[in-house]
Image (cartoon, rainbow over all chains, first blue to last red; front, side, top):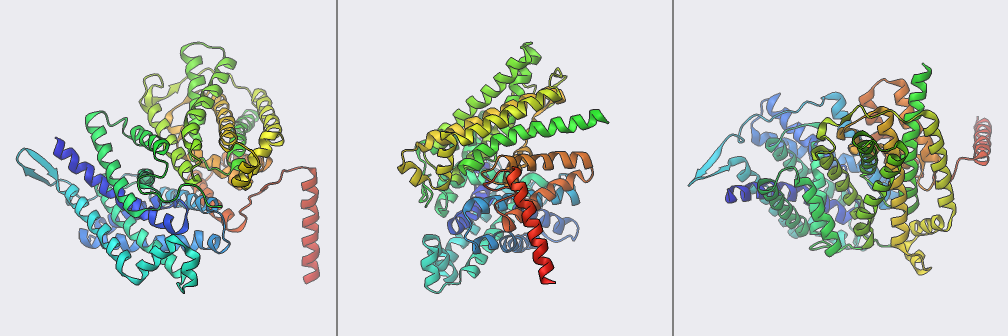
Length: 290
Length: 295
């Protein structure tokens, strides 16, 4: 029971971590909460689902398709909803509202066109279990853990070694100086959103397989925001740690206490943490810059 | 037909009361609440439970709903506002707060879970709603024009400078939050006793979003702007009754477009008055004249 819960918790935590990293990545550069991220994840899940059921693609191809599609959507999202604001140097409040508008727009567009039906993914991995002693572990969970860690490692490697990655890290410290040193900021931000979108695609696929695909599934990013705050807004290691902590704790609460108090628990955790440790675990942004 | 129109007017005004509250908070402190439906829900449930199970007088129940919302506002505002956090933290905290309240309402014994409370006594009348709306608007106006309101504006514009001038940041923000929570609670109580049936799914993030959209579209730092926006957002689709799903698609698109092309909203930092009507007229004639000059 304990091991099983831990594995499920890690799997959920891994997905939270993916989402929290995508969200933190945008936050570290543009300094605003990208509330549209959840709807990109939702669309990624829909793309994966329809690729598998309508076109009959194998799961691997569907994941790749969902990654590419979400990255493109995220990129477009920035171009259409944020780039004008960025050029005007608007305050982060305007970005946030624009992001919220995008989320409402996309979510309800799906409602209006595809409908509110819940779609279950074709059962490729969901039904399989690894039996080991008297513990049974879902293959999907194992895949989710492996895949999210692989994705985060790849992103880490990319940020540490590639030229674009170094530029992104520089811009997260000081965008102006970065620009003065000859970095094309517009291009850089495009890359940030593509990376965030790719993570959204992966997490959308796994969320869809673990739960179901439906228009409001993007609201699960609330948990990713909470995870990012726990780890410290704008910090990528923080986002990973926060995601894992939240996922594991939540799963234990719903397994040993009650699944009803799970959401209330995450929120209470957030508020308590804000009181005790306002910067989060690895946070560097506390108060607003003037 | 007259009954239908009065129904639409009453519902719009109930939303106006909640919107005025949120306008005082978001518009005058610059903090963004994404869970304001929770205050509406708390007021609605508190008032409804009191009249439903305990036969409390409607007015007392209504006030209790407002007071309960205000109290919850203090409980949620104290830790989140105390630490002078970035507005992002606050927005995320309210987001979680809104969802938590809904989950609680769905699972508590006294709220009868997802089934909701059917058959609440219909006590709210149109004239009552009109009276309370006017009262709330009057209080809001006085609040904004008072020392507290000026302090809130100073905080919104530059909180470091405001703090240097001796304004207590935390107290100003908390006061605005509690005011808006009480407004939301009263609106919720009126709502419950108007439609006579409430259930948790009425108070989702969609409602929070509608309220926030009204404030943003109406204009931050204005009271009349959000009121007009709330009426447009609630009454118009209600009257048209078409494309119910597409309405929210339109909201989203409208929010983005407003941010891109008119970030100050309908009446950003201004109020609708006879003067502004005159200046609008001036502007219209002027642009007509300019266009005439061009062609």
